[in-house]
Length: 386
Image (cartoon, rainbow, N blue to C red):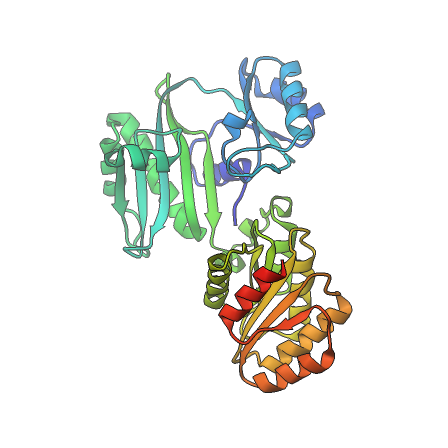
């Protein structure tokens, strides 16, 4: 789960990390008063969306008057933000953060993630803040300093101090930065984060160390332990079909192709998408209905797949184990009646009760249903059906 920058700032503030004051607005008419309350001649106006590239897209602006703040806010609310991360459709802006501009002397990057190779959290810091860390890693990997720490014991203060010194800070500034790093690592562990990032962490012209932008991702599986974090979820930033799938315990991710996929098992779903590509097709989604799918769940899966206007054919690939093939066949027949198949549906069934299932599908005489003998046959037939 992701949160917005303004929410991330509050999390930092609650952890004792210094963050500049800010205002959050949800319509342009609030911008002039927010500008005046901030009491700064120059104010930054930042769209709050779960996508990067805001600055290049023109959705981060410096303003020097209340009227200018309102004008930029009105533009941001009116038009979806389009960047490399959003695709051509863009994302709608529902909230805007306004904060005093900071006179920056130097920028740094600080984050905590899980190092999956070492299976422990790692604190990363770089003297090259304000840009994508992937760019720094590609161009100058030595600029990224790291400190791994025990998942139960946490980051040590001496590790934080060493990292602050390694990115070019000294004395009081290094002490302030080390304190921020230590608190960020603790916050990462306490809130079950998968990412806790400050970019940039800045040294101001006056010598202060401040966090002026932040990003947090949280482990969905741990949200039951953090109702305060779960309450920050913004459904408007999510794909509606993915939210609908989650309500029915289905794992669904929308893609850009035109062949819908309904599969039981994540590994089988990945293989199914691969073989569709191998035979010249393009998957429209990843959809894992799970090993214990119910007929109701399978029908809902079809509703989600067929609601996508890009879908021109569907491949059903089920290996019957816990979910028996005859149960899936029954669900397919029900889906044909309740949802209606307006595109070809190629079905590959294998496993428990497969003969019964194939007989059920044959006797149902659903015009758009086409059986396949194996996965290769299914992939070829669904691509040909287009």
